[in-house]
Length: 309
Image 1 (cartoon, rainbow, N blue to C red):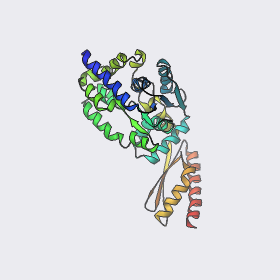
Image 2 (cartoon, rainbow, N blue to C red):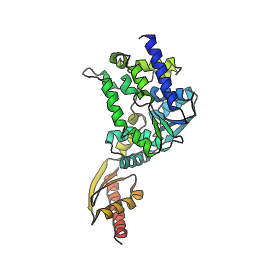
Image 3 (cartoon, helix red, strand yellow):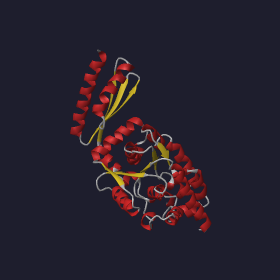
Image 4 (tube, rainbow, N blue to C red):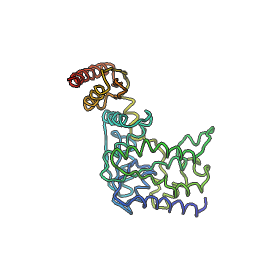
């Protein structure tokens, strides 16, 4: 690789981070190269809050703790039990139209945004698409197009990361998706970026910028696995039942759904379509599913009586 390309890439990443640091920022932090590098650079230009999210003893929490220590930054750890993680996932699902796998993947980001004390939320999104980080890029049959990967991600951001930031009145910053970083990264071929381990130009740039090699060379672990969010959701929510309840009017259906939402949060997903409430009740066992369904229907009955008065 030519040193000049690496120098330009390093400078572009530093510049992109600096441009976002016009106020204090919060970094959604996993301890991997992507989020650690932007945090490491941001502390030169702003006050930085690092937030790591995960279940007890999860990979991301341990990685985040060691990374924060190595770059000498304070870390805010949000440790959630599996049931709490599920409750947050259902809350997010009520506000965003995402696929199940996206809920699992975005949970740490959602919780970081929810707990951010600063108005700018910075993340490492885009690094895997831009620099060929995902393992699927290195499969023999893979037909890779990193330019399309970046373009598709930018489209998904609108209903995912940007939407979450808006819900919590935050400004989203994704330095790796800035025009100057994308242009600098594209000076390296896809083969150079994907390589045998992924993100080689980024790893070299990180070291050039002063990030410890132990962090720069860390292997990729997907957010849903690293944080423990996927395991928590899939382990607890083993059983579910779908219910459709018809009311006399749409107004009554909306009133009932709104009044029961606080009590059902975390174990029932509801939506209102015309004069119907569609609900999905989830639980970890058939016995608890039955109890949860009975409790839900009791809440609905009381709310409907109030609404009809």
